[in-house]
Image 1 (cartoon, protein in one colour):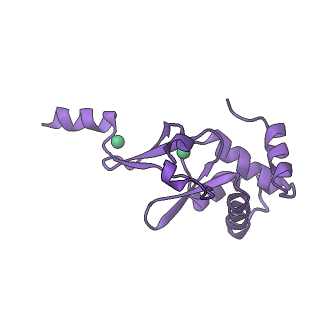
Image 2: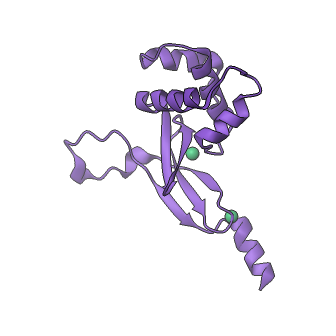
Length: 143
Ligand SMILES: [Zn+2]
Ligand SMILES: [Zn+2]
């Protein structure tokens, strides 16, 4: 279930991040768009609603949110950083044919091996790469 605006506000408070309209807007955007947008995409999407918004603000906001642990950064594709609301545990599947990044629901905590006992694991990332079913179908049809 998607967190409410109130829940997002509370999450900011719990993480000690001071509340601002921009921060809330960016969080809500990531909640509503599970497309793993880049900072530029977030900026382009929010600009019409927030005419005073600057690219620098979006970059800084995303950095603050990522540092607080509310937002996760994905660097699945080398140079570009994408952002994701860190709510329900999931891994990612990057389709090499269409470029889409899909969420893969999974229990990341269960993947931490016993050999890491005593280590303070803060984050677990799982990235799959391959071909999504839709693209696999297309490829099959083309053959
Ligand atoms: Zn695909
Ligand atoms: Zn995701």
